[in-house]
Length: 181
Image (cartoon, rainbow, N blue to C red):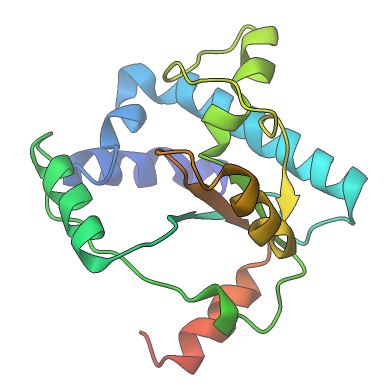
């Protein structure tokens, strides 16, 4: 979401701090990752607009949604990241039911790079990791459909969703309601 003139500085800060998955922003990987990231975001925005309505922002804010989430699960994931030489990452738990405006919130089955894997391959773009193709891949859904999709895939051992918030005001309202600086 940063203007082009600030992008390099922000990415350098992420790399210097060794933040969550920082390696993708390292100088040697940065351009390829960002090209892929922007492509996937454009695919999601265009698909969501075709299926529902135009979203407010050009780029989303991302969250992960894990069924049966527990603080112990989060702590274990953070310990795993520490073994990859990343410092302790902070996390923010957001209860989706507390969001008063969900109009511009979408989601994909698993993360969007994994979900749009086949589209990326067809475009000759890099794919982070192999993943089993699922019938709901290459699709972006409105957040109100999450229960139905969960029920279709609840037996999947690796079930998680990536949530895309296309209106930063939604998060700002939530932040203020929780008195978070």
